[in-house]
Length: 448
Image (cartoon, rainbow, N blue to C red):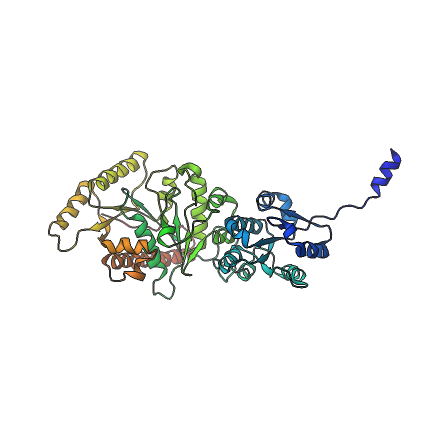
């Protein structure tokens, strides 16, 4: 027994794990195996895509230097899984090297935007892996803004983003506007999408940065109206939002024409209670820390976290139509808030598909609707007709294909109105910040 113990004691310690390859079958990348052995000896391992997702969530993963994702054309069908592996590696603080054989340009773009730090084609040129490893070792620590920009992330600003989700610095708290339909088909999503686009395209020299969040967890249509793919990672982000920082959150967004950032609805139909008030509060806090204006498209149903959004929003819009359904549901909504003791001073109403000027009885019907519910409309949006439906079907904002439509013009006016109020409130907040008493700025409107 002593001889055996002595012999075992003399066996060399295995090399510590310094990196892993992630692939469908690493044996199909024999040149990569040779280069990994030349670079790391026995200090590396191999995982499948599914195994990598599990491993990268463990504490042991943070001890690695980097991961190498090897993919070929056959793996393009699993692009969401590849993106999930990349994002999970970035959350663990690891650098990502992509080895690609025959991947299309769109797939490459998505991988780089998800956070891949370096790239090499396969078959690997001589010293290509060694040079890639050398580059990532000399880069700034993972998570730095410049490293993310070099990786092709279009959603990270060129300035260093504070790690704290509170924004920090002199940045005032972002304005948050939520929009909910009083009844199905009242057009809240159409208004939300186009209001966000108008705000993002204001001609001001200091146009706000805008994020549009689709909280329609079951049938949200923001992505459809903008021709954006729903990300499979949305569920993971929503359920793990408490552990995310600003940079990780920005990487979960989808840019639209480099002017608007969108948090799409999940790819699957999820129960509305899959998230709670804490997750929604953390999501909105991150969004307000990263952007100047947050637009939230709410689901038609009342949820356990509706109150969270309602209390957080600076203005909570209810989108109505001149119909019995909208009137009844609006009344029920008002009674619900009163019964729960929730203040209604920041609840506002939008009338969509309003009667045209040639409708002689239209003004009277609007006044009767307002009087019966004891409310005033913050904005009256005209009926844009079939053109609005056609533009939505072409997945484009109204401004791009129907600039002369009456609805487009009124939403643009609403955007300018909200921006003006936002700037005034920011000015007051900045003035108060200079005084001895630093109070949180209240962003709200008085109606009625």
